[in-house]
Length: 79
Image (cartoon, rainbow, N blue to C red):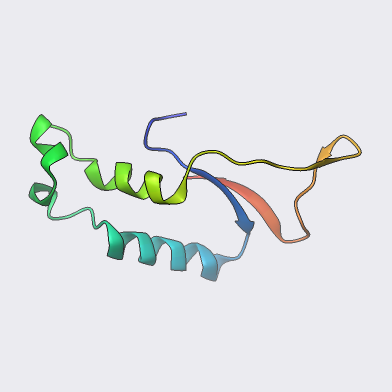
């Protein structure tokens, strides 16, 4: 998994996906790239590091009768 990737579990609902994208972009917008000190290294992904930190990268999933136990609408996401 890439250092800026995040794993989380939630409902697989398009409106929620859009809400996450909007919320994260408000908190840590990609542009202006010059806004972030990290980007002075020649990279342009400081916002992705911040977004990953907010969303986390560790999850615990129940296993019931040998299968991952997501609730009916749940699924895992790698962002």
